[in-house]
Every structure is written in C-alpha cells, then in structure tokens.
Length: 353
Image (cartoon, rainbow, N blue to C red; front, side, top):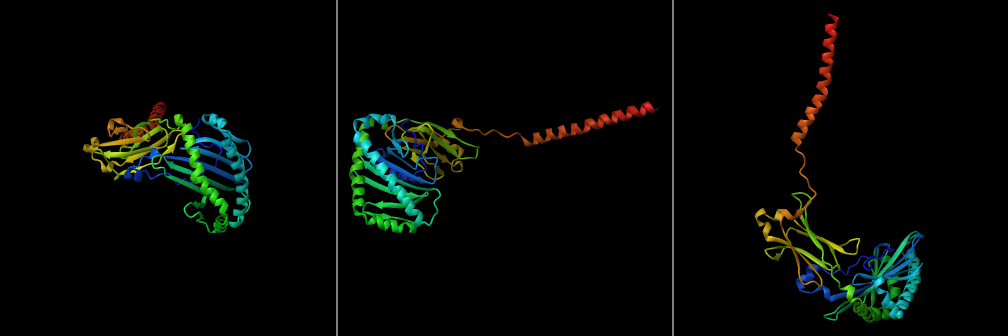
C-alpha cells in the first residue's frame, strides 16, 4: 500500500514539526493549506542483519519510495509512472543516498570518538525537507540529526549555523559551521529545490494524495465510572481533529485529548476522553463529540447518549449470593461424609446386638 510506513526503518527522529492543533484553531488557520516533503535517512553500524543505510521520502506523510544500501531504490506503485517520466529525479535520489551513506559512515566514526564509545551498535539519523503553505506561499525548511536516539544537531536557516544540545558535538558543529559551501547548498535545497519537488509531487499525486477517508466514530467506556472516550478510527490523511462541545461550544475542562495514531492498514485513529465527574446526568444531552477531517467540509457529530456507549464491562456477580452458595456447598461436602459414617456406625452397633 502506498500509505505503508518505511518497513525496514529503525524508529525515525522525533518529529517536532507536528502543528499545535489547538493553536491552529485559535488562529483560524486551515491545516490543509500546509504540505510537506520529508526525507529520512538512517545509518546503522554494528548490526549485520539489516542494511547499513536506509532512506525514504514522504509527501504529506505518504511514502514515495525507499532506498537501502543492499538493493538500491524501490518505488511505491502510485509513483512508478512519475519517475519513469522524470528519470532525473530517481537519479538524484540514488546519488544523494549513496553520498549520504558514505558521509554517515564517516560521521559515526567521528561521533564514537567524540562520545568516547566502543564500536558496538550506533545509529545516526537525519530528517530534512520543507513545508509549503499553498495560500500564503510561506516555505519552512528543516534539517535535523539524531545520534543513538537523541537530538544531535539542527540547522538554523536564519543564521546558517548548526545548533546542538550535546557538548560532545560542539566540535562537529564548529566544523560544519565552517563549511560555507555546504551551508549554501543546504539553504538552496531546502528553500528552493525542495519546494519545487513538493509542488511537482502534489500536482502528480492530486488524485490519491488528497483522497479523504472518513472514520467510524464510537463512544467507548471501560466501567460506569470511567471517562467516556470518543474514538474515531479508519480516517485518512492524518489531519483529523476531535473535541468535545457543550451547548455547541468547545470545552477543555474535564477533557483529555489523545494523539493521532497509525492503524495497520495505513489509516489513522484518534480519541478524546470526557470525564463524567464534570457532567451531571441531566446535562448529558447538552454534550456532543465533533470530528473534523482536513479537506472535508462536514463534521461528524456524535451526541453523548448512554444507549450509544459501547463497553466490555459486565456487572460482577453478587458476592453475598456467591459466599452463601459456597458455604452451602462446603457444608454439604462436610456433612454428607459425617452422616454416612454415623449411619455405618449405627448399623454396626445393631449387628453386634
């Protein structure tokens, strides 16, 4: 499936580009106006069972294809024709991947020395790319590195300098800061070439990139005293928004919002909980749950209704009845043998007489 994840990848760098949805709503921005092209690259040392280098590209979180140091490039089905018509793109990806493979190998060796580490298993990862707002024209580029699962370096495109939270990476930062030609290449790619690629991909993929899939929405509850969870699953793309309302107004008190999570089929799920302690029985009818999907005009509204709540909870067996039954059974198991022995003893005494 075109929406499957990068199956051979180690976990990618933590993505800090996810918009703050509450802030987006307050500011009145439409999330569907922002598009992204992201490149992920991972180099692993000390593991023989997987390729040393893997990389991939995603448009609006939809995978185009991937590359690894063993088999080379592999395109997703929906993108094969584009790269057949634009072979220079595939050539560029292959060249960049090979160059990154050698660069990452050398960087891991340097970082092992900086961090005073043995050979062992080490991973360096990069996420770079761009975001483009098709209404304002605003472009934001990013280039982030992590090492062994922790933030390492990030490029500040305003000052064209590298930023690091790690003292061990300061020497690498200074060395990269001094590579002015490389910095200019980064600026040019992230600010100009990457957005051009993104616009081409959006134009080509408009038939499947912008196909919205609506979810099924349910009200779930573990026990009668648990929060009620409004759960949406099966939506695409991952630009869904869900919140609780009272009398038509969004509420935050007593509400615990969840994160968008992936399903195995490439769709997504999202939940938001409402604590019942803040809701009186007579006020239930005033509450509803709203799901909004980017690119879809109509909301999915689910009323807070006791009869619609799904739960696996079952009323426990009455303990008093259970204990009484247990006592009766236990008494029977004791009394019956005693009665039987008494009967036998009487029979024996009569026979003696």
